[in-house]
Length: 370
Image 1 (cartoon, rainbow, N blue to C red):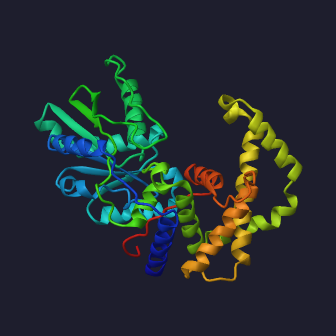
Image 2 (cartoon, one colour; image 1 turned 45 degrees about the vertical axis):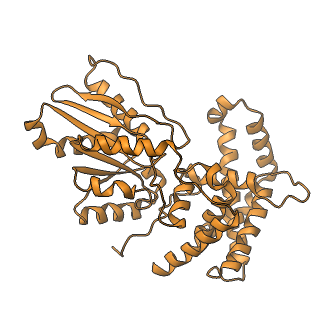
Image 3 (spheres, rainbow, N blue to C red; image 1 turned 135 degrees about the vertical axis):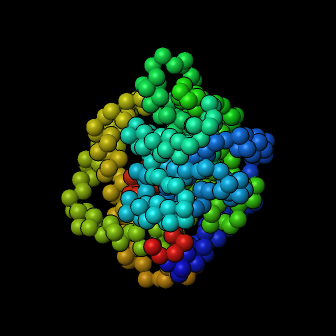
């Protein structure tokens, strides 16, 4: 585990330096938001700290930890459907062994969020007897799913209390930083419990490049800040170091069954279909499935034929370049003379990873073997 961590660190440095330039992780609006969050945390009776289940440690806002540890707190590891379930259970056990309430959730799942609300009510049982009005605050770095969680809570509470005044739902978007103000939502009348949604804020200085790249890979940092090719190279670094492509070896034996004509037909149907109906078209789903399998086959084939050492930075970089060149063909990226960049292929690869199409992953290593 330690060897893997050192290798990942070197891979992170390679990907970080490949694109050059200084990265500004901390946009100006986050400073004001951080101050507002700190002020309101003093009033909170309980805090739900939402983290990305794929990076349970890297998605923590370290600047807020001293304040959060002094409050009633529940760690909600969101996007559990994108995380390896076996390792996820070990992470929950790790936090509970540290005397920290923790639950893995999917913010879009009613049953999952209902379990979280049950835990919130249990943790507030004593406070309910003392205070007529309670405040629950939701915090987290950008794009971990805070607003999606708030919307699910609002939907559940509306069904519980149909006569309750209708509140606006939080705005949800695919880009980090959509929620840029602090808004409150009443979720219960007896007793009165309010939930505050807050904008996602990063720390002013991310402690190391590997943490920053993990945040970028999972979408907490806008792609334009780091660069899609740089992030994709880091993703491939992790996959190769962990030997993930070997898990797709079985797909190599299905290559003969891969129908190129059907693939091209499905691709054309996908490209020509209206954007609004793409999710509803069965041939589109088949095309995406075929493309994912071809991506996995390609990465596996190149990895197995590779004779270098993935622990060597130069060898690893050569392997990644070969994989990106091959992926350009898989993704049908038009070849341009004298263009050695991999932007379009990198963007498509990141989309597959972030949507869970390449499989469930947890990028952080447990602090110690559990």
